[in-house]
Length: 279
Ligand SMILES: C[S@@+](CC[C@H](N)C(=O)[O-])C[C@H]1O[C@@H](n2cnc3c(N)ncnc32)[C@H](O)[C@@H]1O
Image (cartoon, rainbow, N blue to C red; front, side):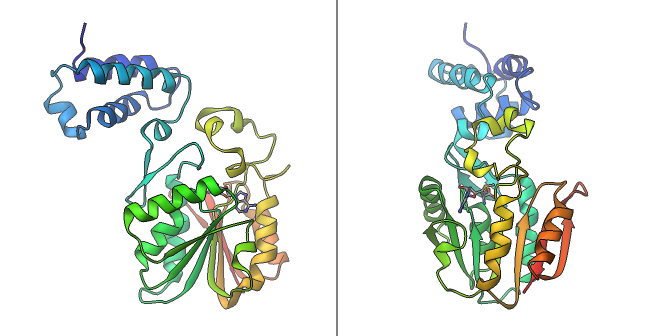
């Protein structure tokens, strides 16, 4: 028998209870994705019947979500810094915590600056596109070792019509050749190989190369910190996102490489998630 919108939400919330920390929200997002309805419509038309095609599609998505697939991969979309981004299993799903990296970068970049900034390991392009949108006079170079990720980032750039980003393929600093920049930002992989979190939740479906960085999770940060210095002008900045428990280690890495004014910034939950230094 056909279900109403309200009945679907109740049914799906129940189905997802064991698999998701936010079953009702997931049910609503999938319903909005398939029907094209706005959230308010789910309430105002709660008693409307779902068309059979939509119900069939929703049942398929529900099964995949119940197996653990992230909602963002099921809908193909994720919002970051108010930008509507396309995401696929080739890219990390941008996290709200990473908005702190954007916030901190913007805090250093004057509104009318004409800086050159690199976002290393751009993934979906989230950080590069947010900074480029907020500072249209800056030139943002977005790099990634994954060609598949770069293709998604480029598609997001075209869709959002942000003109001041260029995309380059390669390992960390390599695509910058001998360019000197005003700022380098990165949200690199920072999970330790054996970390049990890798076997839980959404991360099971994300690219391993976007998550894991050696035995202690710091191998990418070490390479970036060591190689970024010669690409940053005197007085310029390096900003890195890292794990909530990695601040002392990242601080030591940055100080050890000779960065000055090394500082760590807490996120909204008070967790130290972004560290920076100047050259
Ligand atoms: C944690 S994800 C961050 C993605 C995006 N910046 C974000 O914040 O959502 C790390 C990114 O670094 C890229 N990456 C991993 N190893 C790399 C390397 N050696 N050189 C360049 N990029 C690399 C991955 O492909 C991935 O896109």
